Image (cartoon, rainbow, N blue to C red; front, side, top):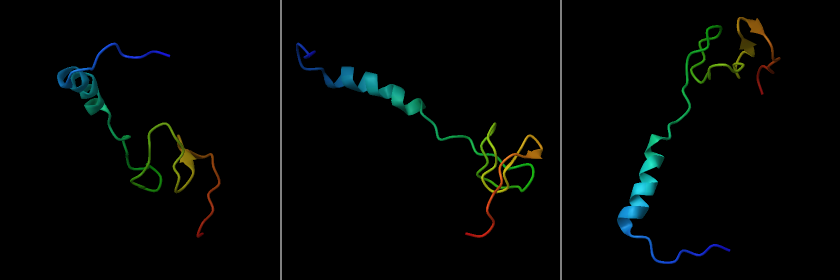
Length: 63
């Protein structure tokens, strides 16, 4: 098992962790069929089930 030879300094640890800032939330668009705001590109819409202008998933209405 690998064990660090010495303690990592604060600056070294913070330099490594600074890359985590670039992580972003997934991009959300409006669905072209039902105008649902939580639509993600290249995926079927969870509200209406449409993708690329056609119905690909059947969606239960009212749960």
